[in-house]
Image (cartoon, rainbow, N blue to C red):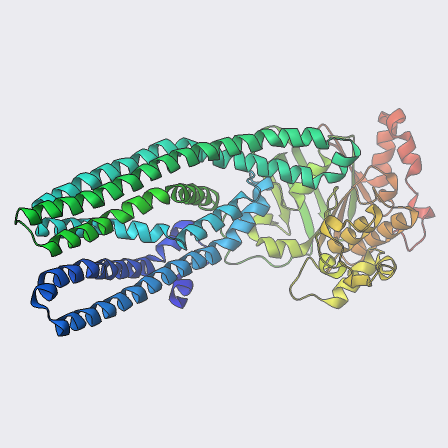
Length: 592
């Protein structure tokens, strides 16, 4: 099945699910061909019984029996081989589709919270992909490929005797009616089950992620009860689905047994009346059983089929509308300026502007401190500057190019970002600083750690840079996490460094290290944007931007802006102005 894998499209395709399934057309045609051969070979048992009863037994010919038996054994061996090959092809189609869609699915999951207007499905998309792969690797597709061959067995029964054919037709109509009834009655419970399962998963993940708050505030029992509502909905929907499918499945199985016996009894009547031979009686029973088996199996796999179909629809909805394709030619790495021109920013999917008509520019070597009251839009501005929130209007440009002119990876290498809520990943300290770069640059990791003032702190940790931190850096203190995250932001000297509340968990030593890090960014020709509440973060900046109610109130040299702010709001900003160190009084190692 190497051909299947190599035929799959690259992840750059816009409608990847449709392209991926279309690329497997030749493999599906091969499965259809094998199914045709298999269904012809499945006539072997009926033909063998017909020949034994009508020729071998009346003639008492042992050589004929031996020859027939050898031919039948060969046919059964060939049937087993084709069945094996068909199943292996389907398994590899599922694996190849999984491989083609896995990376886009994970990207969609990671971008879910940032996607405008789209629901954040959490881990559901990965489960949907597993559901599709499992269905393709199971009995479901083989059943669908066998169903079109029912007319072959019906024709065979009509050739044996019209009465037998019409009896089989009546039974097939009944079983098909049951299959359609199963589709209609299980559609709503299947959708309810999928919806309740997604809600339960989201609530469980939220509870696990906030385990400390849950334990500290005694919320466990209340959260268990809240999650229990979604769980009860899921169980009830699954039970309704199972009851309907199970009842109709049992009915179809009973009807098939009855129909098989009816064919045998009708065959016996035809033998008694001299209208058919004994071989016809046995062959019709076997042929009827084979004709109706796919229908019964289709009813039994109906729930997995509906689940896989809904999973595929969700995958198409999430991926077919995917993000814009990567640019064929990207600009050079930015080294000169940042320009923000009349930018309006709203939350993804929101319509209310959080930042309005923001305009300013920074040249290489400059650093700006962004200050303002809570909910002024400071963190929103930071998210837009690094490209994780889109701008509703206006433009953000680096060296004249908008952020979307680079691939996400190329843009990320030019940007250092320290969010307000520090998030680290399960891995070593070095891996986190290097942003999990497959080609980890040891010298760059050490340089970033030193630039963040975290080198000595890391050496004191167990195993130093090779210490595994656990999920979210759970083994570290808040200050340690913040300094390692700062080192990650400074890895490989990005041109623009955006730090959101970078000293919220730092002590005096950490504040000094932060000031030195900002000074180093400026000294090497980078740009630094610092979102600040604590005045110590402004020690190494030369510019200040004030935000209030989403609008820029002032932008300019630090001393000038702070003095104007003090004059306009003495009660609110006097303490802050006094707390900001005078650049002339800060050691040379701390300011530029």
